[in-house]
Length: 231
Image (cartoon, rainbow, N blue to C red):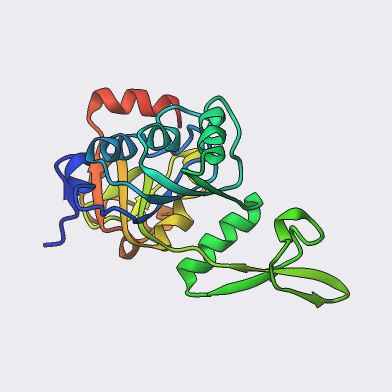
């Protein structure tokens, strides 16, 4: 019988190694897998490359990993916010490397990684500092920049509901970076508010098929209340 549920977030992240590449879903606090991130801060893996839309919007997101000295490199589109000062300080002392990608380009790099596409051309960032040093090519009289796809060793995502196999349904704005990140990692771990039996979810509303999901963590009742405030 297929069973992907783990007893706790701590057990779900226990095997993460130093130097891993981690994709973290969410847009600000919406759809943020904050309990998995919290478990990773206790687990302590270091020298991580973290891919996330933003780092500074909430303290229980990627900012927690930065504060805990676990991050070597960040790839994101929005490195500003209440917790950006610490990132800037660590960039200045050389302990963290920052790679900025336009938001749409970041999403497409992850989607391409999940689809097995190694790179693609986009006009976004052409003629800007973000395009400097990258291969370019002209299509339809417009300059395009070559962008490499992104894949991860792990992806932390959040969904509203899962069945025992790992088919996922998202709640409103949880459906941001989470679905594409689920496809682009070797091991995708989803924290969810509810786990039901196979067949209880209408196949027409499933967004992420179970083939992309390897581990499930169900939030307890107390945790669910907190997380629902964030989406």
